[in-house]
Image (cartoon, rainbow, N blue to C red; front, side, top):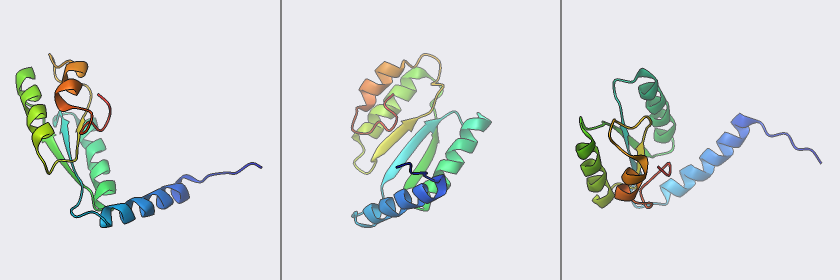
Length: 116
């Protein structure tokens, strides 16, 4: 039997399930998004993600990439160690000199949202 899924209905079902899971937590999930804040497309994308996440009780915190590769890697190390950070997203393109594989290893799989 053919079943047609409608995007909005499916999204609302998933969102309702997610809201229930978030409400059962001791605190709201927190995701830090590292990005090039000067990139208009990236900024628009993150604003849309924030709006969707906030409706579900999830905190998304945009943060500018450090000016150099060493600073980006250091920030990833810090975020990996922060107990109240549940997830980290690194938006592409990564800053010059930052290797995706190396960044993923520094961050670790437990916090990596996108599987750098």
